[in-house]
Image 1 (cartoon, rainbow, N blue to C red):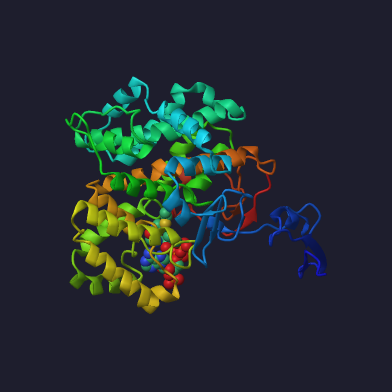
Image 2: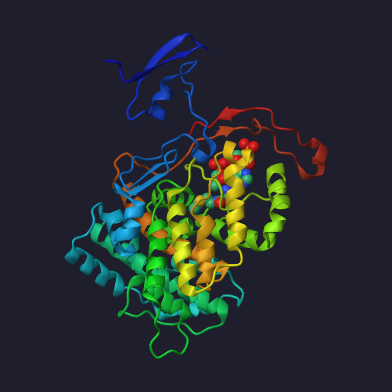
Length: 446
Ligand code: ACO
């Protein structure tokens, strides 16, 4: 039987090393023994943006990007979207198994009874400018929750930790809806214990003066499916931030705030907002060829909602969302005028060699914005709608990190490319010309 090892010959010294291979992976620390001189720091790997580095072992979410597979705890996401609710998925992500009916009832009751926020949070949201972006408000207010629950810093205490996890999942929709209401200049709507998690969020966003606010159950289901599809996505940018902040043992409120901030960027969860703005900018099918030409030139905008670091095939979430979009358009009784633009862009991207050769397929964000638009939710709110369900994924990953004996505070290495030591220059001797370009490249040794 072949040995599960890797033999490395260092041509600088002629020495040979054998390092174990487990799960098709070598440990970066095993390379440290490879050095030219005694006392050297040893060999490192250089991997900006973690292109080929596993930062953890995880049992939560499985993705096969080439085959277009996404599973939470082993269950295909399309089956969960069809058969489960978002809270069932949140329970699954966090606990590893689908809940029994009584477990789900208790979990739903726990979450439902933690949706209110302290009245001071309300004043806090009121303090934002009238045109503040709701994602900025969400990031700030979820971080502020840390000050309301000082016990949350005891992250290694199971019961305290779990209580904050319930609070965060319960309160995110309230903060999100209130951020939206503030930006609309509308009074806040308090949470209701009478309706589901997702319907409650819609009520807090939309209710005006109706004595009984009713949403079509299929609309609630559609949003719930979107929540399921966005619940987790293994080690993406924001999850990596969540784990990284959590690795310093910071409390989960500030860690979620950091993760949400990472999600806000247009290359990550902010892409759904960017997609809609892009479709509006293109405006009509006749403008597409010029737009695509600009994208392909590499100097213009990217085709937002296309491409993914991991999926080199159709994003399985995009498939479900595309079907969902049709159902929602039927329910609201009108198709988005941007739909023909989206369909034509997709057709071109799936046939044009530029996109095909780079394996740029529609991702989760390409169609979700059109659904939100049909539900009359403004584009500013799209990343907020992503952050609500992703909170369960962030928390599951955070807890897994805290309980993982392999993990320590996250602290990458660097290759130092700056100056060697030099003498301080007094002010009267400084000139722009006295600056010399850095020429050395050195590893840090702390
Ligand atoms: N439009 C046009 N060209 C693209 C796009 C795009 N959307 N995405 C990648 N490319 C091109 C790049 O220019 C590059 O071409 P080159 O080889 O000629 O230089 C090649 O494809 C590889 O691109 P990278 O940037 O190296 O791919 P990476 O894995 O780093 O980026 C990302 C992935 C950030 C998602 C990228 O595809 C992108 O910017 N997409 C648009 C934004 C988007 O939709 N983000 C949402 C992702 S899903 C999520 O986060 C929830």
